[in-house]
Length: 231
Image (tube, rainbow, N blue to C red; front, side, top):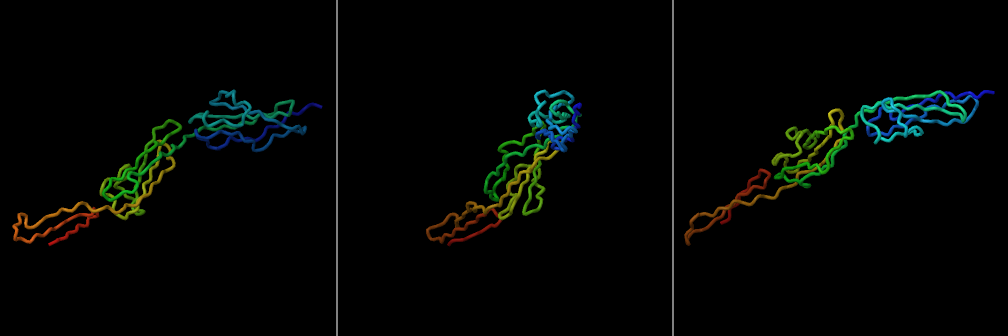
């Protein structure tokens, strides 16, 4: 009785649409069939842009560090029944763009006042595994509504934020093709202490017989002017 070669399995490369940050895995969707009932083993042969990657000829997985955007990868899966190789199954995938990774941010000052310029400081920059230039899109919101006057700026100028307002700033990295995960910072504007008063004494050149009075005017930085007179 002559041995019968096994029939090819059904295979797929996962993920279906891989990026340069993904591992490539060859998955056997349906096992090969051996008409003689022999147990099957499989050999994996990977190719990058048509050239065999020899180190991967017995592996079902290619690490993300070995793939780059734009490359075409294929895998051949060859069943063997212990005596004979069977029909070859093949799957192909093209590596797509990876979205950039978000930056690390912090707010300065951490508890802003109405008298402060409020800055989003980039502690660690956004990165792109494909080497693309990354830009940051900045969106400010005041009390849940867009505050367009600060868009695409990492600094909110002094006077833009008022006491009691609740703010959110959203920073999204973009590599020219895809947006990465956004980073959100939230803050409320705290009360500002009053500025030093301006004091005047009347009369300006008093005599020993004059009654003196003092008047003070100060601003508490929330556009509320106060005046007090002391006799």
